[in-house]
Figure 1 (cartoon, helix red, strand yellow):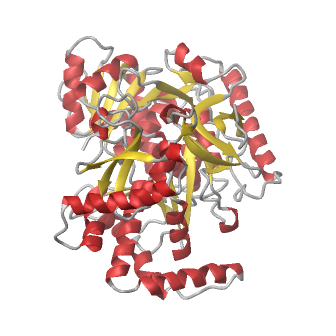
Figure 2: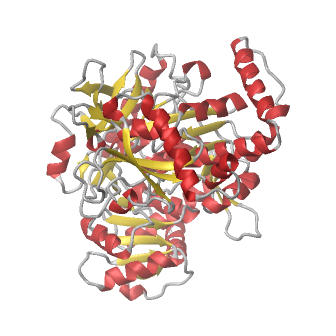
Figure 3: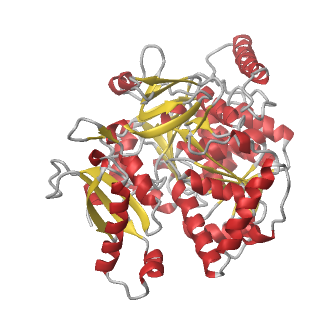
Length: 613
């Protein structure tokens, strides 16, 4: 960023950027692929341009909804007010000397987080969203690795951690800007209030300071560094350009669309690329509203109050809703009625008939009564669960993405006849896919090329070269195939594959799918016990956490641990009987504790404790 070009040169650069993106929109409009359902897009060149467009076209509509106190309603912030706030915050940050610097961002999903992200990427420098689950030592390492000169904390807990990190004296950290205090603690030593800083910037803008408003943004420049999950020793900083981010936000909306007056319910952490692009940037692009959930334990309450129209989620959350719905229906003796309704609904849809919704009204009310679209991502979900929600009356789809792809590369269209929810999704426009080393079934490593692929890993040419080849193909490490209609199917993860004694590949994800389909299984992890010192048995292992409510339903209230394990073994024996010998599960470990997971609720496969009871 920074004003590197004369006004004339810069205007020509921005004109060319807009022409290129408008050309993509025009090409999209003439595409023969009917799965691109929504083609009427507007061209924006960067994140500042995106916010400016929305402030001009949707000015009084809310961009954010947030509850600050339990006994207060959700507050709304308009697009126009957000733009003014962002201009003020960005101006003040430039005045601190943070132009073109790397700025960390950590804390709860909030208006403060959203405005900070927009300010940094809209004319200040490079944003580095940080995982709020990391401990102080891990955050210290990422401060060094990401070369952070400032960090914005949206919680006093993180503020205290970064004060310790700054005091250590081995980082380039100059400012800690805290959104949980109203006044500066020690401005001379860089301990600043976010609220006070924004008000200082507002006065500067009113006084005619245009350094931020007129800042030059080239959309191929670095906008964000996102560190991949894992231990900090191997965590890689994914570099995404402004162009990567805005195109992913725009192209996602060709197969599902958020519109002005839609309310998207934000559950997942914003530092994660899936939530940041799929909810946050998509909404800012389209003029929709982001309503921040206060946390997992408040989902039911907040949904009832917000009454969202779109929910972006991960499988574990949708599975939880699904199981609770089935349990409630069963307790009321309505299981047969629901099954009959869904069967009739499927038939009625074929003939474009509409059935009364009396049978499903309680389910619809559970999501606030206005929900029309639910999207699952972050991990594979059983297509039968999505079909259930579709038959109830929602548009339920899944997509596929990786941080290195900004992140979404495939998504199922929301029109029912184009949904293939056994797949990870249909390729986004302008995204190419090839299958490397495909076997006789067309299964091999999935590779992508296109405008949303990352610039590389920050200060890490070796790892960049390992996944980005000279022709621009990103090698995902995922194993699967592409069908004739350009839908991506994932069968496993390259690094997770188990090599059976006969040399054949076994994908733990396949076996986990069979186990997770058992009602008594809450969650599981399949792993290779061959040569593993944590077990005395060879062969394929499964560590399983059982569902106490389902066990009680099957075995009665006084069931014993032995009875539960015996029931599980019988059901696993049935699964094994349908599998070739080399794929069979040889040993089961029943675990009572929760698995250690990532912030998108995926079980960490390489944490030794996750294998244990």
